[in-house]
Image (tube, rainbow, N blue to C red; front, side, top):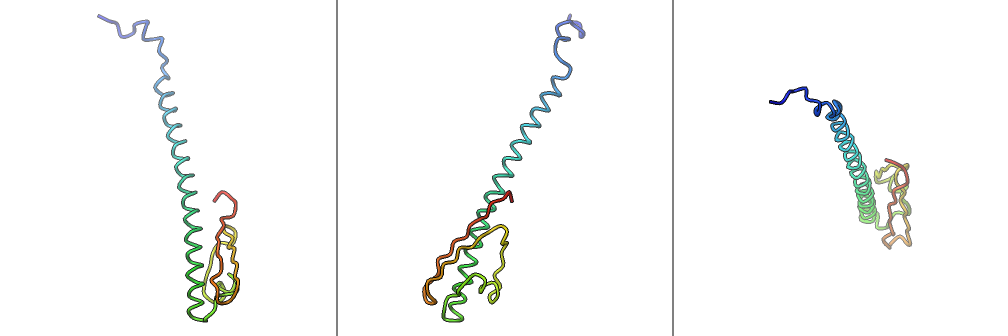
Length: 113
């Protein structure tokens, strides 16, 4: 019969379970942080696509109402209610003529959010 307090059992650290749990918890935390970062990047890219679509819709709406494309993004902001975060996005708006669809590109500005 084996004694519960056998010498071979004492060589195992009493903290082994706690250390293992801490390592697993740390690993889960790192995976969670990586997932949040990935979701944030995807969300930001989708935001730029949605903004570009909104600008294009406003441009087409302006053309349908006024018979000409707007001269600038600020015109869309003033007359058609376009709003966006100027700190987060830059809209490159290249209008060639009042009867030619402008070239519209939305660029996400640098930053962590």
